[in-house]
Image (tube, rainbow, N blue to C red):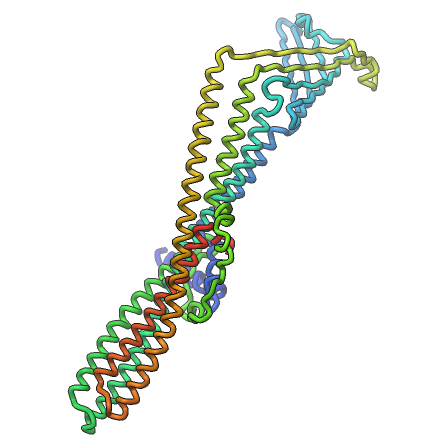
Length: 469
């Protein structure tokens, strides 16, 4: 049995890897990565469920306006006598404007029937209307519930975008760390290859007496040092890949693994420009659409609806009901209709001190004030983060342009030193020194490009636009 489970686990792992290999291209850029994360990551699916929840809440609130069919039947029999037999069926239709229509049929009989419940033997048909002209005229519990549900849907949509915005920032950091570690690994591989080639050449030259034997020792130390750097680069790349894999899923349930042949997007500092940053030219307008601010505004809308309902409850309750009635005769229930046959009623209620309503209103006003303070604080904080990220982006762009020239100069310097060394006019120490400077310049360029791309992510996160990528 244990072997069966182990075999099943192996099949699941293989299927996970194969699915990942089918979906993940060899040249794996950020755009493709984000598409997979948004479509399959568990947090992304949970975020989408928030929207579905909000839609269900609106449907629930709309149910308060559904027509209702009611039937009331009550009978009593004792000592062979029918004391009473009450029967009533009716249809109620509520409306958005607080008016409720009602129609139905009533038939009562029995030896001890209450006098006010007596109706003709054929029963009575009735239709009528009920309206609140005091409390509930402009808003009531049903209308408030629907408006609150609509505001909650907007809040859930904003929270979904906020969850995706935060998720993609973390995922983007993982991607660019993977990008950086990959190209650092490639640089260290090339550096080791160069050291190995030089060691073989120096060893042969020393054997023929063209180079001092001490150069052989220096070159082998250089090989060992670069092997150490390569081992660290391999470790960094493995860890970066493992972290990137935590964002790769199939339908939020099956984890995927990055295929071994997948590599990040092309490293080309010259093509880095203001891509994806048009929105930063209008930071204020973009910030207003930030999901965190939208969620706060939706909460304020819900409180505003609640405040309006509480203010409505300060009014006295005054409900009017009017129902024309007619005897059911023959096939036409309205043949005996008369405007003189009806029932009507009035209900009035008003709390003298209004302590409950006034306390509720005060609490809501305080909540609205707190939400306004929270909103402004969030807006200022997000504006600072966006500005700081934009400054970092612009600074790294300047550094990249400058360092691109520096890398080129280091390359020329190294080539010149190699020509001198081959002509016997330079030393192994100078070659190693020039080469080390060039390698460090390449690694620094990778670091700057990575910082630049992460700065772009910070800007898009600060203005809440990552979920739209």
